Length: 292
Image 1: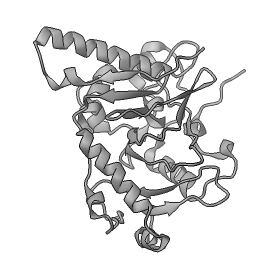
Image 2 (image 1 turned 135 degrees about the vertical axis):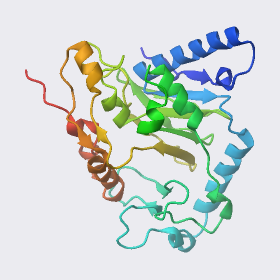
Image 3 (image 1 turned 90 degrees about the vertical axis):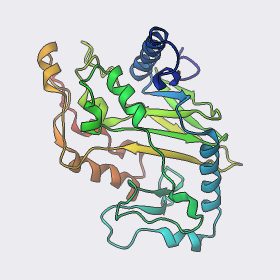
């Protein structure tokens, strides 16, 4: 029987409060929770992360304000015809099993962004550099490795409607919405890159993994959430880290590839979603077949 909730991590010790020895112990305890969460769930929630609860609530209200606008108003924020990246407002086609509408934005200042004029406050952006440093330390990587490599992971926060479910041991675990909590999701590329860093076990299973998850929305309520993604630079090579391959003496589980080869496949899941969930492109697209 899987645990009924995903782990929650208190980031307060990472802000340097309190005596150093006590703080160090609390950091170690928090990092152990993160290691377990990444190993068993691929998800965890964080509290005391430094983002004002009032700001998080305001952004959700802005989301409601935008999506309650008329279709005519929302369509003013759609990407231009032929745009290489689908930034701006879009809605899933009728045949897609993923039923939602969304506003996709890249980093502030990107020429691809199509910023809504209504409401104007949507231009405000958030930062998550602290979490990057914590994950870097949890994984035992050289200082600033993830910052320099810009590894792929995501985090989001949502309203009180809920519906997010994480799959663990064949069961679906609901992620309970809590005020001020942010949900962190370890996603595809970090699973591949770190296959051999405390992350590969000898049964050939990724120990730190990208988790299967879904949203089951209540039929009588709309659900709003903000998802923030970290991605790689286009020319970065993605492959299991070779220094850990030699240490463990195992063959890689994935082919190496340039991120710019993978990104269009993932974007196609959004722009041209397949009618069958099993046809959605995931990191397993690059899995090396295992000899029987």
